[in-house]
Image (cartoon, rainbow, N blue to C red; front, side, top):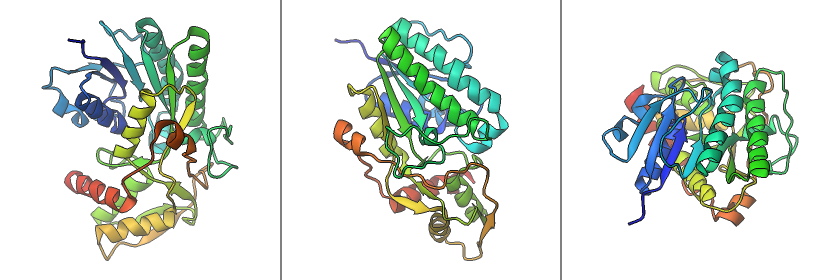
Length: 314
């Protein structure tokens, strides 16, 4: 009988990392989770600890990484990912994107593993092209407050491509657009957790700017499916994975308030943070053509599932 394939997931206790651990266990892999728990939550993966197919390393990937035994695949998802985190931890954000990615690529090279790295729609910055296609180089302020995250991810893409071209490492690159679902941190500062937790607590819901800026929200199960298909594909250039259904943040806040159903909640407006992108919508032509992927869960269904989780954790 063939030996089970083994996958290393960095950022395993995070929102996306934990869902990936679940998916790969379900697909019959042995999963090695790695996380320093800087922004991850051990509760996201504690249901996996009794399983013989799962092992966990409490480790900071900006330090030397040692995992004994074979590794067939690596999913590199370690990084603070919300503005509230990377504004609070700018140096760690840059280090995990640079040193951490370098170390993980070193493991891929040594183990002859295929690696998928998590990039982001933030590499497009405040885009001058709409919707965003993978060929667009972006409009990023390297010294602005968001630059620590944007440039960390741009560097991640550069070094990944260098390892692919120079060392022949099998690499895959995903550019993730706004994703939501169970296991998001209630206090992570992004639009959906903020709106939902404020509305559940009966507080005013805070929208930055006039709310005309747009986002495109993809449910986590759809994203995980896209990641799985990309890892198993033969395509090594970046691929956008996200939901092209675009909505203004004002309309999104209203949707969330209506869903929560608290009649006393009002929407209030605060000044827009510096370099906040005004438009965000993925062009997913490549994902459709190369991976046969497109999102299946519509926003109303995804929001209902997410609300159930938030009600239990508020």
